[in-house]
Image (cartoon, rainbow, N blue to C red; front, side, top):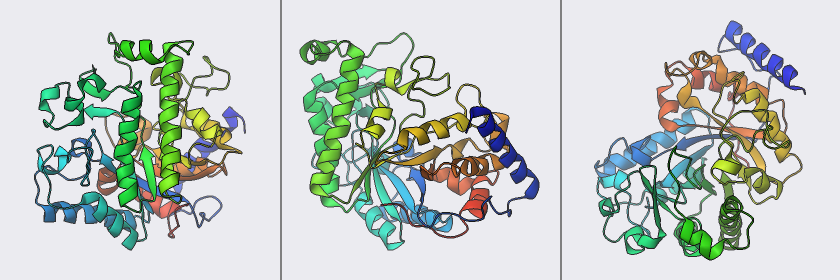
Length: 406
């Protein structure tokens, strides 16, 4: 389907939804019996859960259960739960400290096991629980002394790179890559996770006027590569490939998925890229997301297509078919990451003030058989739903329950 045809199809769908009302049936009149219907449950900065740090264990648990019940009530089938937001843990980890989002103090036990509880309670409700790990972010500030004294980043300061007002582990150090995997594998060994999930943070996003200082690591390990960028991409490739192998060795049924930034490369840079004019994950954060899909390293990919239909720089109607073509013929299942948080936000473009925008996304994606479902960012927005965009998705697309792919 050509680009103009896709755009016309999407706009026609948007018009139909606007004029027929939320109860209208989607074109085709049916939904797949098996499809991803997920929501991210973000914990960094207490974004979605817990509502604030320092709540009692009973209150935290009640809020978590409420989030799982919310997913069920919206006929979702998967919760992507952020359990390692900043090189810390939401389970009793021998590698990293308890997260400060729980008690307000990094390293202080909350008196219960959030991840273990989440897995048990999600499964009791028929939900999949995907444990979401951020590989390299240490802190959303740049002061190592604010970390608990026992933090691995303080015990190994040579692993740490301050950049953009934050602290990161250096992906170019093999010992860092091994440590990150060990921390993740502790959770895989302890809990029957349905999936291990990474988001879009690999090398940090560019900051004007700043350089990520990995000069020493590049001098030591980068000699075989044509450029520092190629060496950095290889570092991330190794993380992805090794993590996938270690997960399968311990729990063969546990999936491995990544939700990358939605643009791999622009066509103006690479003819294989998308007709977009946006940041490029391949070049800017050294994540060769297309390769991971084509090589079958992932069980699933959820590109964050957080843009509206018709946006000139990154058109949803352009990117869905681009990713569908990338996934075609691979073993990697394709889901689409949806920007529910933009719906009704007055600072966003006009398209996001229309509750039909998201339903048009699902209708457009349904025309591509490679798209096996959607994941919505994020849980707080599923609950608040200020203009009824999520309610409309449920009414028009999720009338009946569906099983998540395995």
